[in-house]
Length: 252
Image (cartoon, rainbow, N blue to C red; front, side):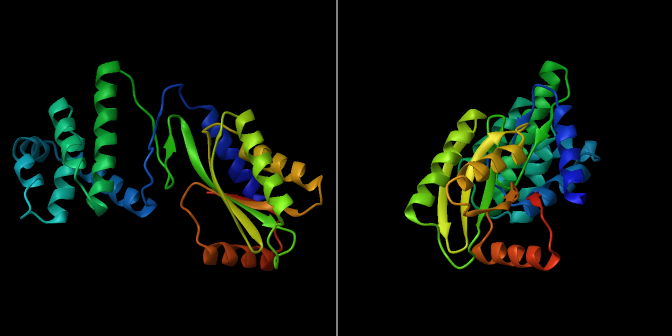
């Protein structure tokens, strides 16, 4: 299946990662991340402007009279300057940043940190980001377990079993349990797992163990590290899955 091929390609790419890599820990909307990195690419091509921005941008960055667009430009420029002073300026601004400027500052700080590390260690740094962020060298995932019965919630025994099996399986793979919610037709959970963890095996093991006691979960599930899905988004995905008559583990 196309989805299996896509998943296998991801697994192969992960196997070739170096031992040292950086994961964005904060939860930042993927669209904002894409905007930042596209803008950052343009900034890196302007060496002269970068030098001038480093020398003159700090005052504007902290001024209430300067608009958001200009501050985003200054932050992106500072992120490309190989100097600890640039890092400290971004770090200081981040302390009180709000909204999109907070997200922009986090990304700028991460980019500058990697630049400094590359220069200090004389080796290229690898940066991995996702919409849900992570912790250390682990990523956060949003998981949807689908009930056999679309019209009913799991009963108390089934809810306890799913939660217990989830926690047990995560611990086996150095993962962390964060939360679980139960709704009519499905259950959602947030978990943290090592980057190279085999997601398919882990979550299908959980389903298989639970189904030994009543066969109440579907084999299919949704797993994403892009964002927390709303109830409406989940229902639309499940309806589309039924229309297509597919049997997939969706991983984004």
